[in-house]
Length: 144
Image (cartoon, rainbow, N blue to C red; front, side, top):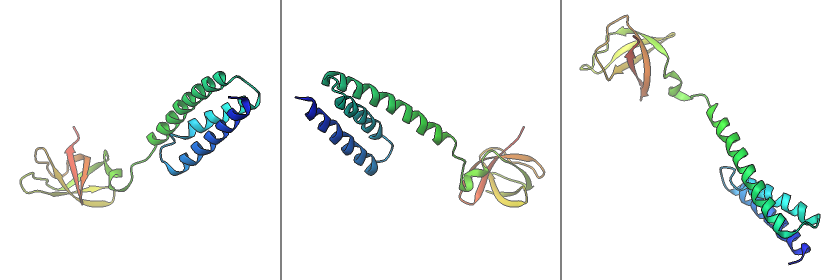
């Protein structure tokens, strides 16, 4: 095939992959669209088609690795939301938490919550750490 054909192939691939990125999630098609744009630029500079293909593959892989690293890094910074924001905080027991009775009460900052434990009973005044939120109850364990 001549260089003019490769120009249209790479432009078409870049447009198709760019549009596919818009309708899919996860930033998977974008690196390949970038690779196709670079290959199209090489086609306009009359570089051999074999070199264009190699550059397309290499550019796409590098862009994919960099973009996935960027996306993963952004996911790590998400703060807990909703009730999960209470996990790993401490509270003070107001009413004894007996495993057999089901619940007791704790004070976390200025709020009072019903609490339960999966371990041994916890006495009044003990400091506890919140390990989970189940419905409207905090699951706690003693801080030792």
